[in-house]
Length: 165
Image (cartoon, rainbow, N blue to C red):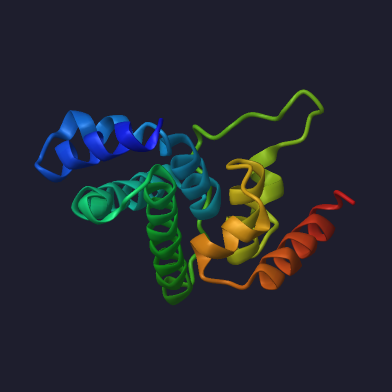
């Protein structure tokens, strides 16, 4: 989408046009859902985090001047919601399990959800953004509020934990 098209869609969305906002949301929804799902291990919590982020995005779209700014805002907002959920999980101190609708083992017989389950919360979120969203560490740092070095360290730690060296 070019800058002119984004400006037109964002102006329409800022005026309450839900179809225009839906078109903008289409550019990020897959990364958002899968990042939330693999980070939070639960479909209901992932949907809740994404839904809250959508509300935030609908309110903020008029302030965002490009598709890149929209994408950054949406993923940053999502990561903040994921981190809040992590805090709730740690307060509850009950283990969270993946939904039964999760992905089945891949062609190599590796159960992706089981492998992600081995990772601590932050590493799981960073790894989901990297593997599922295919974001480089610099962008992940922007989304999560971590430094690029911290993101790279978390990715290395996750790779080592999963034995993917």
